[in-house]
Every structure is written in structure tokens, then in C-alpha cells.
Length: 396
Ligand code: NIG
Ligand code: FE
Image (tube, rainbow, N blue to C red):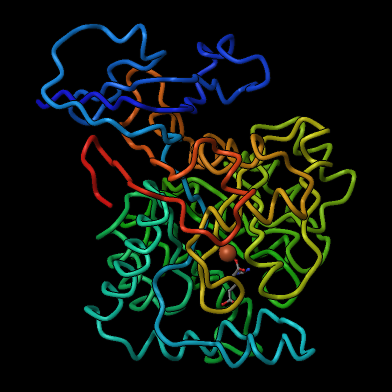
């Protein structure tokens, strides 16, 4: 196996508490100045001050010339399997129209008409776009097929790029079941789940106005858990409701959006292992009020940041963009936002191998064309991702 030493790192973010002492202000980021990292195959073998680099055995030495290195981003919420474009809807919103969950149905029509190859191509294109912006672990949901066969095809396409696949048959009631929501819920929790469970790790429900209510969501998630899937929930994006408490009740890995969390919701999250995943791309693209990350952090809730890439409410794959918005408009410090886009995303996916650069972690990292991670928010819109390493190999 190739041993690679990366040297010349001005600032290394490890997210490793073992490095907390290195820089007083870095907190859980475990920042090391003038650092080096050694990769052994697909794992981190060593990290620390370059002055302490073991005089060894690296097959290859790469001098990064004074750049910052951060863990690869872990993007825990996306909808990559779709066809079509809703830029007209976006333009209408920017002219004053409001967002509604019903727009999902127009993407469903395009997705059903797409071939398997087109669906796989769309997923691949977006996963590659995310990778070039530093996302080395990506989750994706189905949810634009909404029939047994089209949900299965969507998850097969997702399975070609990630093992973090999520069955979201309960995205909205499709037009072919208009007025028959209970029948659709039974289909999702029955035949559709049977076809999709072998292809997914997670099950998700859009629990919100215009989508599914708490009882319907509980029925579907409970069936998914019985089929061996792990629960996560879209909740509180458009209005307050019982979805966040349902996430806690079911031990969900994550409650996502949570823009309209009540005080009771925040308290429930704080006393749980459920991560609050914030998706600023959605508020940006629907011109809605951003979630208050500071309120969640102050209560002790674990917060993740994710892109929510989808054609309706957040057509971005860029975690640097989400970090910049979270810092500017959601009350996060640059350090908190970076932690949430790396270690926070890993927590939301219940992964311990990614989201940090401690010894033994996946050799997934991002080289920034900047001396400090703060530049991710300080220089918004600038393509600072100089290189991406995944599994110990430079991939972008
Ligand atoms: O996460 N909230 C539900 N699903 C997507 C929106 C989907 C759409 O509008 O197509 C979201 O924002
Ligand atoms: Fe979503």
C-alpha cells in the first residue's frame, strides 16, 4: 500500500479532540498549525505538527505550499435521483410566488419518464459536482419516483455512487393517488418498502404541511424500522408540527430542516441522540427565514449542515456555500459551521470513520487554496477547493 505524506499544511483541521490542546481557540476542530498528515492506503496513519513528522517511510511526499487542510465534507441530505428542471418555479418565487411541497409532483413526472441510464447519469453528475467541492461522503434519497418500480430504480441509481441511500417513498402523495392518501401510505409501508428496503440503509418521510402528517409518518417509519432500515425525518421545514418530536420518539439519526422548531422541539432534541440537520440552501432558494442555529447550539443540540440538493427547493451541491450562509445568517461561527459540515454530517449518518482526520479515519480530505478554514465563509462564492483526496487517492 502506498504511504503518502502531505506536508506544508499551514493549518490542519482534524476534528480530533486529541489535538485540542494544540490551539486554544480551536475547540473541537483540533487545529494543528504547520502540520503534516500521513496516509497509509485509505486510512490516516499519522497527523500532527510537521516538526514531529516521523522520519520514515513515505513512498510519496506532497508539499501543499502553506494551504489549509480540512476533513472531507460529509453531506448527509440530498435528493440526487431525478430528471427535469424547475428553474421557472425558482424565478417565479424570486418574483414573489411562495414555495409549496406540491412542486415535487412535476419532477415526479419527468423522473418516471427517464431511463435507468439517465437516472444513474444524473446521480453521477451531481455526486461528481459535489466531490469537486469537497464532499467525500454523500447521502441521497429517492422520492421522485413514488411508484414501486420508480422508487426501486431511483435507489438502484443512488447505489451506484453511495452506500448512504435513503428510501423516501413518502415525499408527497403522487397525482395518481390524489385524494387517496391512506391508500398511498399503505403502499409505501407495504409493497414499495418490500421492493426498496434491500437497496437502502435509511428511511425518511417528509412530515410537513402539504406532505404527510405525524400519524402517517409514524406508520411508514415504523414499518421501515421493522424492515431493517434506520429512520430520519424531514420535519419543520414549512411549519411547526409533531415531526421533530416523532424523530426523537423513534430514535431517528436526524431531524432535517427544523426551521420551525418550537421550544419543546429544541428541548426534545437536546435530550436525544437525534442530530438537527440544517439545510440553508432550501431557505436561500425559497426565500424563507433561515433556521436559528445559535438557538440549537446553545441548547446543546448536535447540528449538521447539508446541501439538500434537489431541483425544487435547493439546487446546490456546495457545502462551502452552505457554510458561508450558516455563518452569515444562522448565527454560526466559522468553526461551528465547518464542524457541522464534517463531523456533524458524520453524526447524522451514524458514521465514525469519516468527518475527522484522527489516526485510523478514512483518508478523505480537502486542500483549500487558503491559509485558514475561516476563508470558506470569509471568501463566499470563491472556488477555494484546490484538491480533494478520498480513500487516500487524489480524486479532484
Ligand atoms: O428537502 N422538503 C422536501 N423535499 C425537498 C424539496 C423537494 C422539492 O421541492 O422538489 C427538500 O427541500
Ligand atoms: Fe430534503
